[in-house]
Image (cartoon, rainbow, N blue to C red):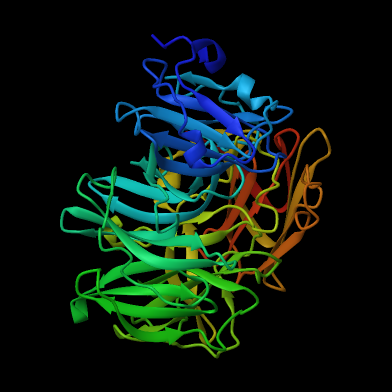
Length: 567
């Protein structure tokens, strides 16, 4: 039986102090210890409000401080301040600063044990893609597989659905479809907020390596690499007392990706630094030696390089050129970039070559740029460590920095792409990364249906030229065009629904197909469309915000079959 809801004004179980200029020391004048009012203090948020500060003080000591857009005139939604870590440890007080005394938030605070309190049912929340229950999410972090469970951590703001207050959120799944919210894994500390990073499985322990970022008095921020250990499979972490393990004076020094390199019996880490990737090695994940850098003059440099990955893949025999039947392996260096994407904003580029444990060498000419996905909404792509069957499984953040804070969702923002498996294929003299929906998506395929639904897979058997139009009764539509002669695939979302929130949103995205497309697989989930060549030679991910689901499909030059998705 759920505990009855209690407004703080009536219950007086917790003192909430508010002032425009009060300091933590001033807040320590008086307090009341909460006794039995509940685990969560629900903070009313107004997204258009300036940021205030929320502090947790225990026995006169500041324990936590976050920037929160506390509601002034109206409440848009609620977020939770979890009091459990502080309860029973002394006199507990919550202090709200830089918010006018008469603001509506002070009348609407609620404390209880109801984890689903005031949860909004949102029309654009995906049904089979991973999303946070509340708050903001961006880059996938620390993904690994262990004991039959896939673990996903992510850049997370628990205190609002706009970027800020970076934590690591945590979700887990057994099938890459149904996700369990595991709460916050890493929270800000004296070294700063928790930026992106990765996890490795070392014996029975999980080790997270992440960037801690804190502002400087002179503007900008300082970024350093830190580690944390988990002995319970990644549910909880203990930060290393010797943090940080790697520092530098470079700007944009972040997003570590370590992995074990068997030939040298050492850990190797690739790190994003400005517009290059740096490679380090270590025997213990604590002391790091600089090995080399990659990036000068290679690929796209229109923005900051971020979220790297480095791994080996096998060239697929069925996609190789006919001149060779021998299987070969090559290394792929993933480099996410913002801005600089093929259609503006953020995107994922990659390089193919060789790695000897010390240095990555790209096999292409420096000016060659290869994109992993040709949509607008595919960024921060990284892979799961320790995936079974030697698979290379990746997830991406399904948004774009041009408008991620403005998309028309409310209590949450952003989803991850469906899981994808990577491989290699050749076309002409170049080697490219193939992208196919992970086999778990086939397992989730349900019964055939006559029309598209808000959550479905559409398989289109193609001819030389094809046009696919998804539409609804409001006249909103998405048009996809395959041109076999030009070897291109395009998606037009200019009339897809709500495109008003950003001038950068309405667009047509175009991808090379590197040969013919025989079959197209399209995944629809309320606010997204992901299109794949079934052989893996093309992927395109775009958000859409129709006022009603697309329930009609017209195909010229092909035949469509629609399947339910079992979510």
